[in-house]
Image 1 (tube, rainbow, N blue to C red):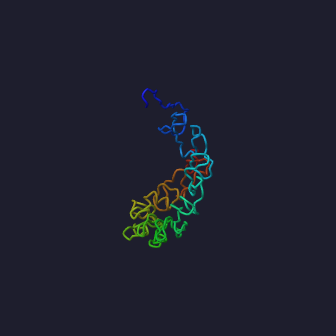
Image 2 (image 1 turned 90 degrees about the vertical axis):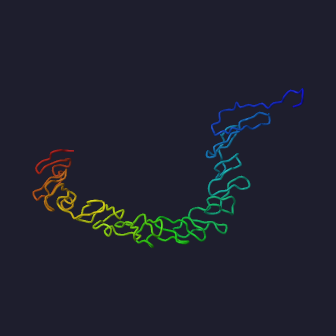
Length: 279
């Protein structure tokens, strides 16, 4: 500052209208030496600053965010910025690129080589020219190809390695000792369906589940077995004689059970001669 002269200060004017977008803390000096708040529009909203507000929508084709009506900043997937700051397409099957001939990320199932996105082998999701890294469910990588899980492990539907199965077909469960899928019956006698070598879900016919890993022969003292040989029976005195029918049924003279709806469609509880409760 020159001695004797009056100081010349910039006029700081921050009385701007409320800006609904994300605003920065910096200021810009305009031609009138006034400090105006510099705003930054939300890039995901597809708006750019106009007259100190984010009120102008991006109309450039395939542009995600722009700085003016003619200048794009970020293009949508499968497009790149060209020399005119517009969005031009990448090569086919390219998700992200910086120009019209290269690709930094091909779509799933493709890899970049020789200036194009080339198709991986069948069922392969991610690969290079020499290696398949991941496969579709039910397959595992093997060099450049994908093998079905059932090739190294019969009856395996989903696997993470040639010796690790996460889902076997019905009636089988993964047994790490093999390794592979083994029949439920071979690991737990008379087990028909299981999800682990020691966890039976359903026993074979005429057997009942005593514990998660034990199926025992049916007898009339077991309610579940009564229902197998005598449908709708709650308690039986033998495999052919029902002593108490389940709710909604009544006992016939031949020691079997019949539905209470014989006394009317709304009958819920009955005996052999009349309805005792309605719906």
